[in-house]
Image (cartoon, rainbow, N blue to C red; front, side):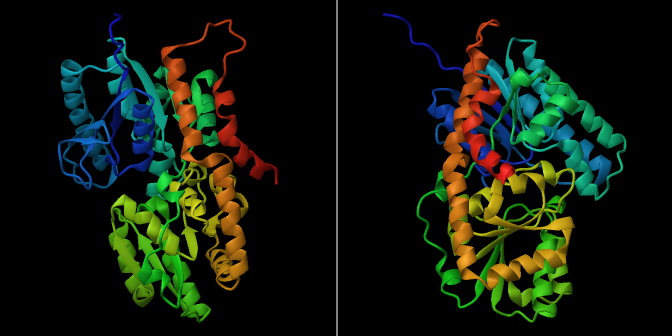
Length: 428
């Protein structure tokens, strides 16, 4: 009788969110577990304060989330503390359970130093590029001027991309950065897009207190950070109310984040509190019913070097639930949502407001855009499509084809199905 083959063990490192709060990381971990891998995650505490927990068969180790500080000292403290905590826990796991791969989720890119350390012990390194850290830093500073911090972030980004055995990007823009700015080999770079969770693909019962209202519901779901531009939504509501005399709607913001206190101040300053409902952070399973109750969804992330490189998961969730969406003209939102959204050029608030009014006054347009968005998801942008690319990456990581094999698939080959719907938009 042959001995049982032990499953390959994957250790995921996540600094800027927790599990299961981070939906993308949770989906990746679940897909790998279902495929037979053993998955472990190290992350900060989030909605769950437990230091260890089994989440759908995934071993989750958490360390206490630190407080946030502004500026350079804030970066040094947050990342220094987090990387130290992750190293201590990873060393414990290394000695007690072992692992074969360190899968680093960013930001920050400097977490890669832990994976590089374990490469000395023969471990593989997968670099999962969620956000471009240098551009994210500039977006949070509201500045395009590079400084020392920006250059340090670029250094760690290049280091991670060059040392990783395989790389993941959420879209073609990020893959281009990995190859052209950071020097990664194209054959090692895979695109695993942000696909909506299956909770957004089934029939969803809308929140009754919103759907039964006689007013239209404008909605936003997601993080409330400086770079997310939710203040633009507040200004749009002010435009609708003051300059267009609209009282036939309510605006709902689902989520929380470091910019929420300033957002609340702006709502009070513009005297539009009576038009807003703020839910704060809610459990993830409660998100789809909120979106299902929205008549129009908003993605107010303004076009800049950072947001143009992001495939926003909230936009994918909106269109999965057949909701028309209004966005600014960020490159990846246009490629993802296509004709399921209306776009405001040049970060212009008046143009954004005009697009919202157009949808408010045209229920047939809302319905047709919603159906087009759902078709885009089903034609290649579900998570199942993305999971196949992730599993192909891991298959090649552990079973690399012969160097002279002309028939072995490339990252572009395994990404072709999930990219088809996006490419159709680019050609329109």
